[in-house]
Length: 228
Image (cartoon, rainbow, N blue to C red; front, side):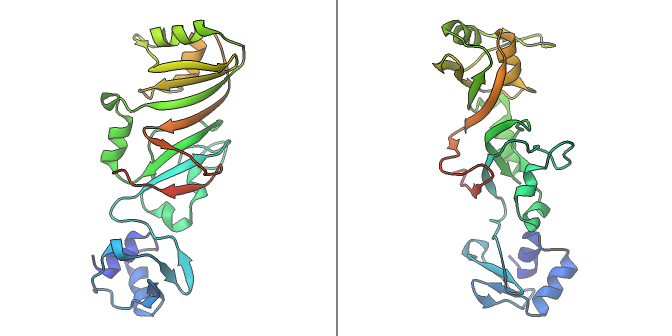
């Protein structure tokens, strides 16, 4: 990959800006000055990038995959209305490279959120066809018993829907904590399912999306992941 194209793909700026930075000895890759725009580099070999002495996070090429522990009161949108965008949690240059959330979490919902620039990966993770499991920890407003789990696993009819929606699994940790697994991604699905089963949600946290969990990531922290 040409150095110029690589620097531009890092979200640093326009082609003209990147060329100026390279030709004016502003770029260092792996601690070595890189000042030839047409020189070839292997993106997989890049471990560090600095511009005018400032370190920048290296964005994998051509695709990147991110696991974020989404905090409360952040919107999964590039144009938030009431709260900050989850994308504001990332450095400016990363926000310039086509970051897209894999599905959405409501502003008041926390936990696993995947972000990528790979459209095929995004589709495969969210399409009902592939039945990727999402596990939620639900804090219920009213104490519940096994009846709630049985109802969710048997299927409920959501408001304004014509088909029964069935939970992949449902179990109670205690009377007000429900672990609910789904393989679809309808609008406000978990909240609507619990409401259709006769209860309400006080708090919602996504524990797992596919095989990814937040692990030791604190709210607002993130890391690159490998989909393979």
